[in-house]
Image 1 (spheres, rainbow, N blue to C red):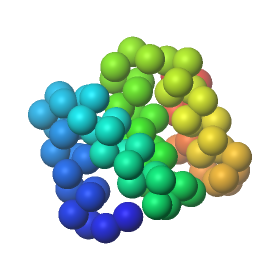
Image 2 (image 1 turned 135 degrees about the vertical axis):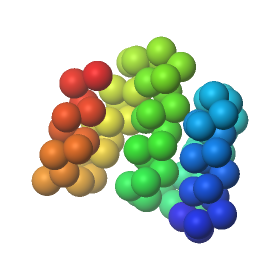
Image 3 (image 1 turned 60 degrees about the vertical axis):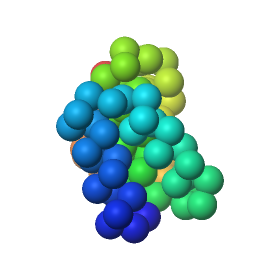
Amino acid sequence: MTAHVALAISAALDAGQLSEAERLCRAALQIHPQDERLLLFLAVSLQWQKRLDEAVAAYARLIDLFPTSSVHWNNYGV
């Protein structure tokens, strides 16, 4: 993920533009499907939209890819 994409997603989250953050994440994940930061941004955007089943699935994907990350295990308990 480029710094530009990360900034755009972060700005969308900060502005409460959660569907835009989700859209940006999903588009970038088409190119980088295992990018840890993109998956985390996606999970957060879904969680903040109260789409908890989808957020939990995104956190589960993070755990599958990065099983030693305590951050992802902690978030998995959304």
